[in-house]
Image 1 (cartoon, one colour):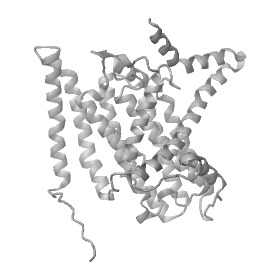
Image 2 (image 1 turned 45 degrees about the vertical axis):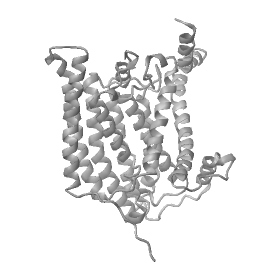
Image 3 (image 1 turned 45 degrees about the horizontal axis):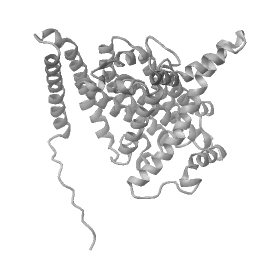
Image 4 (image 1 turned 60 degrees about the vertical axis):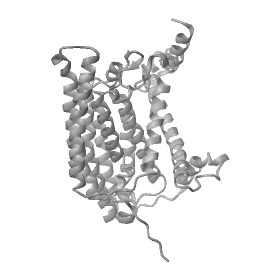
Length: 406
């Protein structure tokens, strides 16, 4: 092993080695507890810190896209704005409606944040860097995700406010509708990998042919599945253009209208934590997890690759928010049931074809790859065009003309 590879491996495992060193230098009876804390604390610290950075980047990025100023007063170039927002949230008065169910009203944001943090337990952030290596990690992730729907309903129902209840019901309808294509698009990866373990799924993608990694997104079914997964993830986290539960023109602020101060900040934090978590799962399933795209870049630490991919997806979320307008509720539900669901099933079928076509092809190697690509691409593109036209309903999109008052 050359010097560069050795240095890269050392930097790759520096946090793992540091954890083991600290545990070994802890008295025997406390080693298990210290090991658990050293696994949990980095997650609790790193991702909320990333939340603060993301909020700043989003506000400045949206300001740039919309030709206006972003935060530029608190600290140099406004970089201390997240700290000012945190102080404001901690010091604002916590107002609870007199008729609210105080216990449930108090627990709702805690349940939402707790479920968001638990999802990180099975995400491999780097090589040998996963909190809990479960054989059914993907199943655990989606099972924990169901807790967010419970928390949303708790918030809307406990507030004793018709607007918050309406927002909660809309949010739950949206989350359930888009959770189905989210899971179905993941099933194709589980089928091809033959496992529900998130670490095993990454390991199966961390191989190279002619320097190119075997990422699932480099296949027709993987590319289509990744796009469907990220669209469904956008709706699951109530991000634009799917932020219907927070439609200010219709239901004011949705299910957390009766929350203020730090409780409101917890809802805000949970939304971004869920976005990071579902993006991390998308990276694990389709983008090779912590692996590099090319073999000659494998010397870069694996955890750096994970966060580079995560930041790229965050930028995409911000870009979409600053570009697309909010959908109507009927458009939202039609898109989920009439387009996303059928396309997710077609991706599963295309993945099966990708798996079994080589056995029916006389040749192998390049010929088999080309035939598989063409067949799977046609299987996906044909229904996509048909479903898109059916969803459009025969309406032609005409050029918009602007008329100004004389």
